[in-house]
Length: 228
Image 1 (tube, rainbow, N blue to C red):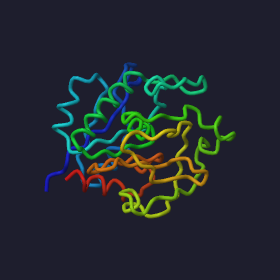
Image 2 (tube, helix red, strand yellow):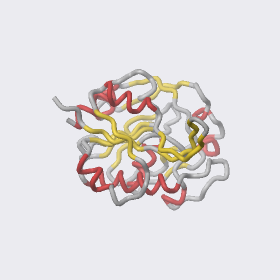
Image 3 (cartoon, one colour):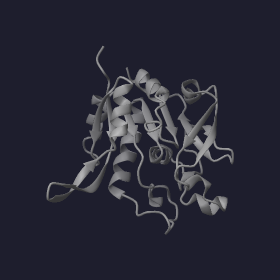
Image 4 (tube, rainbow, N blue to C red):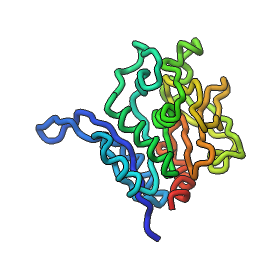
């Protein structure tokens, strides 16, 4: 059986090799490794503009919207927060267009961390640009701090990972208003949304945590199965 081609979003960043420092297309290898372990063939997608997006969507069998710097508030009509890192506007434009095209084509989508926010904004949703201000604490942003997530057992996410999952996923943004057709399917104890799904879609799942890092391959297995 051939492996489904899975596109993984990436970002531009200065990189060093030998004596050179150049802007490079970067993607943490954990995404490609997780796709490969689950039976997919990973392809890194540089955010070089939107003309190739239709070709990507027609040539790929699934898309991973990967993590990274926070989504710019301008994408959902919000006010930027000076404490948030400077957004990568080129990446926002590319990934929002890719997400919308993948949704229209019913292409399986696994949206991780920042990717979950991209999926929500692509459907007209909004974000909390700086979560600690809303909660009066930074419990969601503490590196290495783990917490338990409650998952809807009737959802695709719940069928893949079960009713409860322990995650470590520092983040300073969160879903505020859900986009059209999206349902919240996982929550932290303080009811911050940690998982979303696109209704009526073959596989459109977003999670706040990083399943590519934690060694639990069940969600990637479910994603690749949908992409076959």
